[in-house]
Image 1 (cartoon, rainbow, N blue to C red):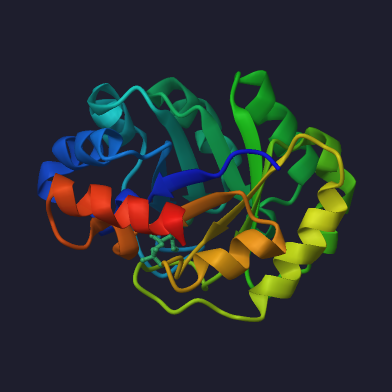
Image 2: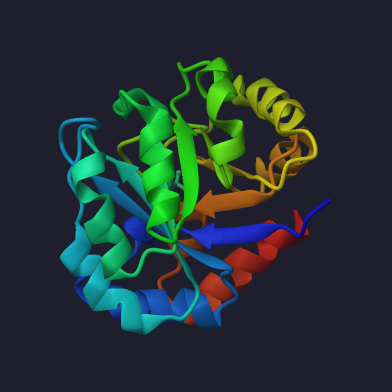
Length: 218
Ligand code: DX5
Ligand code: ZN
């Protein structure tokens, strides 16, 4: 099995000190930095866009993993790549021509990901597996941090893992990931774990380090 990656979601950080909060989880042992972009249209919340990503890019050299909860996504791909995102994940539900969108992400030099809402079947990505570097199985309905994990997603993770087969594709989960849920998710086949509230609770770098270690241990 591939090594496990921990990707703190900055959604749960103190936005007034965003750069410092990213540097803190970087030093505390984060593998990736997960950036939740919301448009108030695809999801019922609004966060930030490319200018903020560009501004905080200098806070860490770790992999910037953008999770675009925006519709449409295509008009903004270039701007997120230019802002310093190294991975761009779009939602299957938000892309009318998913294959084209994924080709564009790779043409921009980024790793290409597709996210699936809890209600979306994994069959939505059968036709694009060879254009993917990452599949994100949402384990909550996207829009907010701090929601409870949806247990029915464990079987979906297992089905996506089987679909991936021997391909070099990361299987990411996002939403309600905590020391209580991460073990089952890993056993089901996930290898990249986004966590917001479970990492940013405590408010200090020492707390973030403990929280990340607790996730790895579980
Ligand atoms: C949800 C976002 C998540 C969120 C996770 O729409 O995509 O990344 O920040 O937060 P927690 O880990 O608190 O569920
Ligand atoms: Zn996310």
